[in-house]
Length: 330
Ligand SMILES: NC(=O)c1ccc[n+]([C@@H]2O[C@H](COP(=O)([O-])OP(=O)(O)OC[C@H]3O[C@@H](n4cnc5c(N)ncnc54)[C@H](OP(=O)(O)O)[C@@H]3O)[C@@H](O)[C@H]2O)c1
Image 1 (cartoon, rainbow, N blue to C red):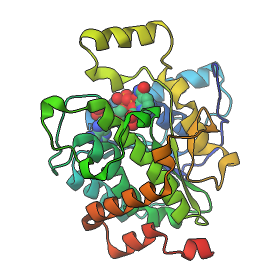
Image 2: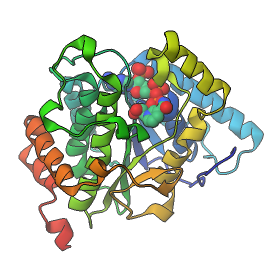
Image 3: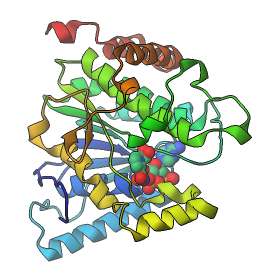
Image 4: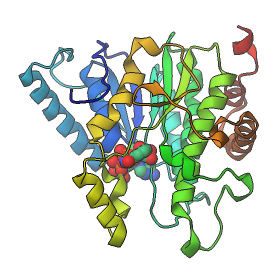
């Protein structure tokens, strides 16, 4: 499976259910493909049906190629259990529709992989009035977690929430007063706001891991490394283009498959049962920056976020997320 850390091929049946956001491309594509090749059903929660159906077709072709190569641990099924569900993280209405459709289905949910993300483009505001990275990378995933957490709690003894963060969190400032950028679009500090969105994910995993300790649902965040994916599509001019070219030519950037190994490992490997609230890279726990580790700031971010998203959650969902102490008390 190539160099670097790897993951075990864990046999799963089709009733093991994964949701992967942004699964039509890059890291999400590899996570969805490999976990479904182990037998799980994977819902690809994506904004474009066309791109997702193409991805599903490609995954099935690659599955047949892996079978022909004799790759160990593949499901015996003839085709992969992959399903598309519409989700546009830039719209809270779409997030709500996605969650309500999933809730109505009555299905269990074992792994929720909040992978989709944007970064480094020019300033954009969502239709809900939020700086785009705050909404797409953080707030919308927070709502999905809040709305589906109750289902995960009832889904069995080992359910996992994973958040695709980044070492770029170190470029983010923690300042709740300026959390929702509203300045001059021409002076938008894009790397700082990308970093902020990734910082919040690490802080969320730490805070929620602590609140829900003792429940059967764990939450962790990940830095996948520098990945040669569509993520860099906005870096197509001038010096940025040169930097991207150099990244590819020198091999500094990992392929999406190499970059996804830690994520796949954390999603399936039984050795991680019960580990929660941690930040990972290359299948090892790593230390994020001091803001990410600061419990006071984690708590402040949590309160700010709950206030911001409470209109999208029921009383029961809010109580479930708050971890009223019952989990801790056992
Ligand atoms: N690439 C890196 O070097 C790197 C490093 C650290 C962390 N990460 C993180 O890794 C994650 C995956 O990125 P990647 O490198 O695999 O990039 P990618 O190939 O561009 O994949 C990003 C995925 O997110 C989806 N997405 C973007 N906006 C969305 C929205 N509004 N609603 C629903 N889905 C949306 C994209 O869908 P479309 O195809 O429809 O655009 C795509 O499926 C991101 O969270 C990123 O921040 C990447």
